[in-house]
Image 1 (spheres, each protein chain N blue to C red):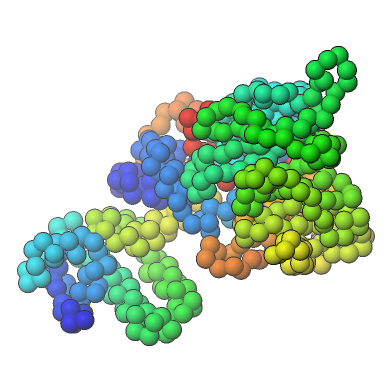
Image 2 (tube, one colour; image 1 turned 90 degrees about the vertical axis):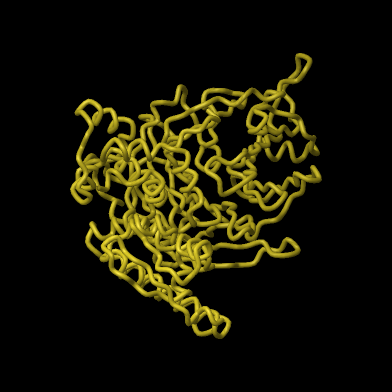
Length: 373
Length: 166
């Protein structure tokens, strides 16, 4: 009976499954296996509402003793260890791009980017930049949300490049853009040297895109935000609330608006949102008892706390075993968000997991293969 | 509209006749098309749906038709957000049937083109699959394992991370 369901109906059922359940379902019998691999099934999956497919938190160990990462399923509330042995070189995660991860090669002094899908074990280098540079800022713009593998653009700005004649390295003022549809880099503009310096020296993390602007926050105090308007090719600097006092600060995109998550010594972790006129307003605070749990009961010292966020979730974390504070959208249509505690990952398949420092990413996991690779 | 008081008759594969209002019938794209093509006076034969399943489908269509009518009545004020939640709860309870009937409901919803019932029942099945191992899935759905041990081992290794028995 069930093994002989019409393929379109079976694909409909599979479209509601997250990758872990799908991986197990496709092992039930040959028909189910075949059906689970069709594009139809994956495209239907991408069209399901948010509540069916919440993003997963992916923790990538910073010092990779063994090449793997740790994924958390928010619905079943369990952790998985995914092997990254398919990666040809050691890498660091830069940014999620829908179901993919943008990576940079660890042992390369100049920037070499690559993309991978840790669930389908596919990997590909991106072409070389036009101008080699070290430590530039990297920003991602996803062009068409809501499809399985959206097209995207990557902006690389600043960094140090070798000087043309014999001398020392110089700050690179050009901005380059990679278009996934053309699979090539183009120089799209240049920036005032002071921005090139700041972007290079502070090596900011993940960018946040709000409409036409890419924002980066500096990686340490005194925090400030740099914005790059893609449409007008202009740069500006924005202030950050309590910039000298924050012990950690991350930019997030929340409900289409620029958000800032940060914590001060002895205080709560807060979330600010940027309103009209580029003014920050306090939006919410991390509930005291959850913050306390995250810090391991220590005094309110937020040093070492990290955060990732996207339109559907904001996660505060520290290391792999410390647990997470998650603020997630409850349903697609409502604007209700709820706070949850997520236990850290300390045990996989009965074996203890080494507590390690991780870099977190929010990814929409997918088993689908894509020809982009 | 006058048509809301009209009823039509559908006939199951077992030969039993079921009456449904036009509004309930409109829940099914297939029935709607057949009525457009052949008119409302004749009985609509639904050879692919047996009586037990038909009764359930009738119940679903009536409930959803009534819900829609209530929404239209006072611009949706009577229903509100709570109403949608209630309907979803009703759907969840409605689908708590044994697997054989659920299977037939899915096929009927697919055949009759009742999108909301198809999506709800597919989601119900997906919920039964979530968190289960392949062995458990086979047991629940009475599926024969037609993989050789080598094939099965290969499948496990492809997505090794997902196979983590507690």
